[in-house]
Amino acid sequence: MLIVIFIIGAILFFLGVIIWKYNLTKIIAGYDEEKTKDKQGLTKWVGLNLIIMGVLSILISILGKWFINNISYFKSGTPWLLFIFFIVIIIFSLWTVLGCKKYEK
Image (cartoon, one colour):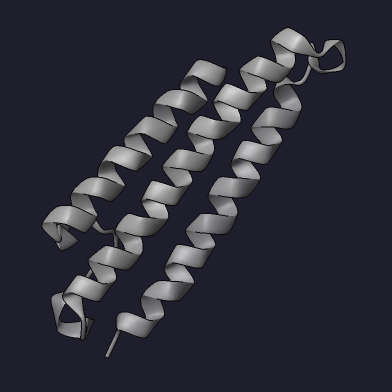
C-alpha cells in the first residue's frame, strides 16, 4: 500500500509542476476562462498545492516504510498511514478549492 501512496504522491508532484510551470489551466477541474481574473495566479496556486500534496504523500510513504521496518509497534501501522494520507489529501484539496475562489471575478 505504501508503494501506491508513493506513486500517487509522484503523480501529484508531477502534475503540480506541469500546471505551475506551463500555466496549464485546461487540466484544472472547473476552470472557466470567463470567470477567472488571474490565470497565472490560479495556476501557481493549484500547482503549488499539488506539489505540496505530492511531497507530503511521498514523505508519508517513506516514513511509513521506515516506521514499519524499524519500530515494532508500527508493524500493523498501515491503517494509520492510510488515515493520515487521506486526511492530508482532503485538507489540502479543500484548501486548494477555497483558495481558488480569490482568482474568480
